[in-house]
Length: 370
Ligand code: UDP
Image (cartoon, rainbow, N blue to C red; front, side, top):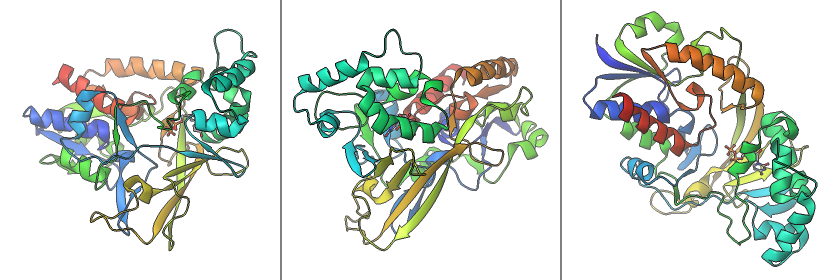
């Protein structure tokens, strides 16, 4: 056969696995349905600004192995994510910290903040069973109502009581004035964009873009001994057991002839009425400067709208509720019987992975299987 490996999908999982395979002397072909590499971390320059075409991606990790690995392919800046929440014109600092508690209740000390939350979380007795109970148990009802409920319902298109608790546990709760959104030792944005980083991962590896696996399946399968598939697992099996749910995101991106629209990379609109979930102002991921350090005169913003995935949309987030979890388990059994194929990544494993977790899982899988 012409190749040892066919890798379906040039996103982070595919690119990392491909790199590891090529470094071990394997002959690899990477294909992607879209006309570009890098999957949903794809960035493209507009007026000197790296625009995150599929939404904000802020790299963060606690894994030294992952941090060392990505630093082989990019230099990272010192960006630290500190989103602002806009609730009907009231601005709150995220994640939940002393800044948030002070703005919400006027409390000044950590003890006062704890006392407020303690009083409000009493309504939850026992182990939280869903996102709503988990949120109230972590930060109380006031914060749930103003900063979580509306945003979450827009983001997931489901009631907070019907969503898994783990989703809200992604966010730190701190009784300090630290508004770093992530609990991560290492954080930053690759200078020059994610596309450049992924293209360096794929250096020397054959990549065919605008190539749909399903349109050329027999021919492509015939090219390689083994397949690494990073697309949606249900699509691989032609939806034989039915569709898994995904959330999709649509962006309305505008170039504005002003230097500063909102003063921050991310502003979340946490009320239910505003139709978008957040606005990203891309230049602030790189401190508003071009590569020579000059201030950029214009700005690019993206309004983000969340919707239930429909055929033809890009899938972004798996919906890890009970029903979909059970359906995924059935697909996983089918996947385990495909001896020639590995399934990986957010879509291949139907898992709400962060970038670093995707990279780590690809590295480990490469260690085990190459
Ligand atoms: N979330 C929220 N309010 C916010 C930001 C996040 O309620 O202002 C909740 C929401 O349920 C969201 C989850 O926290 O889905 C995880 O947010 P994160 O920012 O990690 O999501 P991502 O950036 O992956 O979309």
